[in-house]
Each structure stands twice: as C-alpha cells, then as structure tokens.
Length: 97
Image 1 (cartoon, helix red, strand yellow):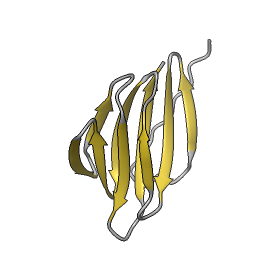
Image 2 (cartoon, rainbow, N blue to C red; image 1 turned 90 degrees about the vertical axis):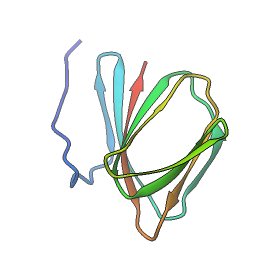
Image 3 (cartoon, rainbow, N blue to C red; image 1 turned 30 degrees about the vertical axis):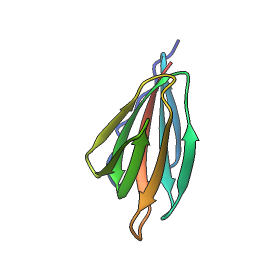
Image 4 (tube, rainbow, N blue to C red; image 1 turned 60 degrees about the horizontal axis):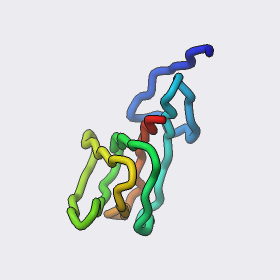
C-alpha cells in the first residue's frame, strides 16, 4: 500500500480525506449552529479543532472546545456536537480503522 501524506496548516480550507494505512484523516468545515445529533461509531475518532468553537456531549459529559483542543471518542460511545459562535468551525478527524 502506498503511503500518502501532506502537511495541513490552520489556514488549509480544503475539505476531503487522506487515507494513510489504517487511518483516515478527514478535514471538514461546519457552519455556525450546526448540530450533529447523538450517534456513535465503530472506530476511534480523534478530533483536532483547528478553528472555531464547539460543544461536545460525550455520554453526558458536556465540554466546550476551541482551536488547539483535541477530542477523543472511543468506539461505541454516544456523542453529539454543536458549533458555537457566529463563525464556522474547522476540524480534522483522524479515524483509526
């Protein structure tokens, strides 16, 4: 399998994913007020908040996060998120397959 990698900066607005072995890196921009309802995944998700503010509710533990914060969600754990403030939120999610 060919290894694909690139440098991602805080100003990188390109949306997409990069497959790196047994990991997938997903870049996404979420608009202000976006609510992701409670759900769960089969994989671990490591979320790097690159820009903006969000609130994560992970099985009842509610925390606000912003640029530079990291959220780790284990497989099978119910969680939801909401973008806070007037601007969008940019995140990189590393999915561990």
